[in-house]
Image (tube, rainbow, N blue to C red):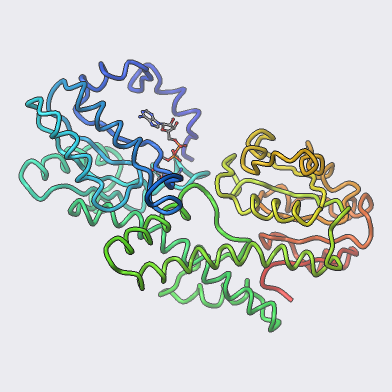
Length: 406
Ligand SMILES: NC(=O)c1ccc[n+]([C@@H]2O[C@H](COP(=O)([O-])OP(=O)(O)OC[C@H]3O[C@@H](n4cnc5c(N)ncnc54)[C@H](O)[C@@H]3O)[C@@H](O)[C@H]2O)c1
């Protein structure tokens, strides 16, 4: 079994892992520098709401150029738009300090919650570089780091631009699968087909495969939306509006799915949740992480608050502060309808409805019979992750709803 990040840091700190704030000295001493800073969606000026904000990447490149210290390989680890290496290169070359810099693209494919396992046994390691002798040597140098634990045939090398574009494309394809099955879930609800059964049936086709076919309230996290927005921005920039429109639809479907979930809640509860208590189980964008960035829970909770519902939120890992910052509500009268619970049971007590928004394992194990006794009747449960067996909940006395199920 692989160790978690905590144990790895504990085992290696002071041996071959060092933390420092002496940035310039460490830049000067390094042969290879990984730029792993955030590349959020730009929220100002040209390209706001779509393009990647590259100011953090650029400031790293400037700092590297200013610090000098010798020839270096500079690795783009952050997810960046295709052609970013050109900008990094220009900044480094602009220093004119006599040192040679090679920019290499090495996108990160790990997923939050399984980061260490993904790093230890990656599906592939992608390294892109300039197709010159010095470029090839730089790619080889970075590849030799991974070769310590990754088989050779899993380390693939490409030109710079293929590598940069592959990362955006991988995320776009993953998000597209979620939006595709979610689109089918809407049709399932109208036709008495069951989306989990459909997903299983199509997933057994080896050309399709079973992963990323779980229907839900939609994707979230800091990457999928930002990377697709970035992809669509690039397409428009390069005069490809049809391609941009195609990928934009993946995001639109994701938005539709969240709104559809809220609408289903409202429909089931006589079109009003004003004055009703809703237990929100889970706020993280997926299980096993405390990350709530772009979590579908954000827009769903905002909509429920807009409909004048009262929310009692419980998430095993996301802090109250983080939830409040995601919701970004300043109106005191709205905040008064928001409370936080220490346990799922506490959140559900005296609630009219339960909404499961993250697929935490512990929500599968709850004693829903006991919980029902503490709730108002009729007690509703809206399983936004298809975690529970609706039939069993109905037998207990819940009015139970899933995604893509009649
Ligand atoms: N989170 C993921 O699962 C994941 C997976 C694959 C790729 N990525 C990509 O990796 C990059 C980082 O993602 P993240 O989720 O770790 O972001 P993050 O926001 O959690 O962390 C980035 C860190 O960089 C720091 N930083 C910013 N500018 C800096 C500078 N000039 N010098 C030093 N530090 C600086 C920030 O303070 C922050 O702590 C992004 O491009 C993202 O798209 C993330």
